Length: 427
Image (cartoon, rainbow, N blue to C red; front, side, top):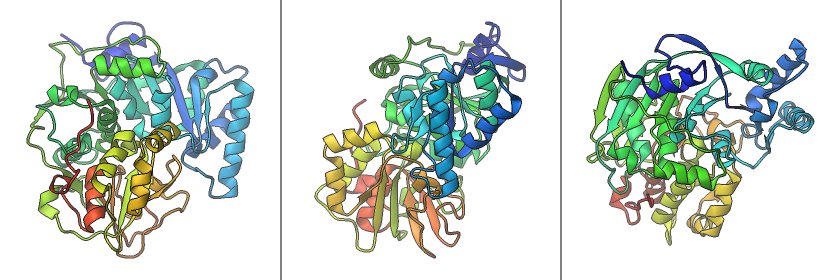
């Protein structure tokens, strides 16, 4: 009987043999991450336990991205503690403006194919885009990792999702993952691993693959892992990662469920207000008025997302009464977008650009609060009631292309119906 990718990676880190779904294993962690919203308790726990040594501390990155910049004294003091800890112990430190944890870890070369990576955020599933087992844990779990290099896991069952055919121009991985949310519902893959495969995945650029793995958190997934290919290897090499140890599922692997999605004919999708799994095709709700457009977050703040928006808004203006905010996922992406002239295009159209970070996504920094009854179209990952600080506003979720097209027209719009909306990333 064969094994899934998740079973193989966890098994290889817990004695060498593939594990079986349902087993409890104690596994060696290759790399860990803790961000500022969870660091306070984690650092206190290390002190409370009186750890005399932290052998894994140099393989634990500290990322200052949620309170970026810090909105209050308490957050600022957490940053002071994190900087002091990193200085003392030699941990990699990503400071305010460097970017969002799920972007800077791969960019920093901290992970590779076959790795086991944990982070204090549910969207740590992002690392599965690189054929790694990435998953979210609590801050105290990372304390244990820094002290021992190990963590316990229940080996998850796996859902195999085959994407049948390349996406149409103007349709993105965001639309795929929204379609899966509409099908499985939020938490529909709770504590399960997802394996995305097929020609639809092969055709995707790395930016889109990261979106696919990242958004699995809304499905409740423990991990979302893609097979590695030459695109994966080239990206990892360019970012200084260790030699890949690619892992592939066996032909006779046992899955909890197998799904085939016809991605060739998939239309752009949106999640309607307050429910990430209330998903419909954009043409079915085209015309819904919007006042605010947001592009960014760990899900869709990458360079290709910004390129999508620029292709649609080049030489044009936002619709009257619409405001648009763009937040790149990292400083590296910010600089690349500047070099390509993308921010000049977006700023000329009427958008505002923020420094890299998570603040706008969860409204921690208070940089943007939607007004009563305002409708926001966002490329973020969640649209819970009150997500942007006002429970009386509405948040709809779509791809960066859908967000930009809607900002251009003032109503939710299928990007394929406007000039530039059929832009396709170079795979």
